[in-house]
Length: 96
Image (cartoon, rainbow, N blue to C red; front, side, top):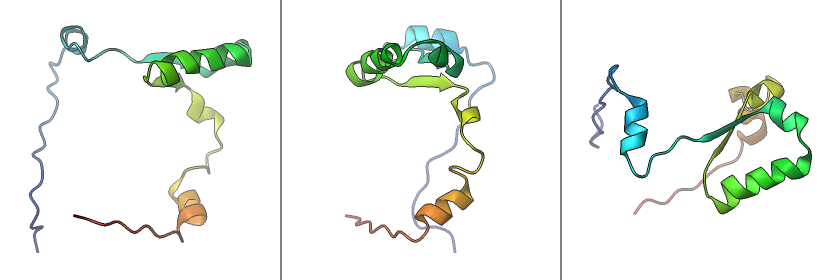
């Protein structure tokens, strides 16, 4: 039986999209700050904490740490890990 709820239409992103122009022309768009895991390793902890404080806490913006996923073990956050660690928890959601 088809769903009674309406779903949003999917509009694929055009292959001709000029991302640079879009970011420059849209006032509330800007590129996210990115740093590598290796850069964190070469700096002291205080420097990293200041970076997080300025960008994330005070600035309210995301900070992408590239390569961080490679430092996690492969089991963590897989569907099996989630099931083993959080599978028995139930969530009650109330709809209005």
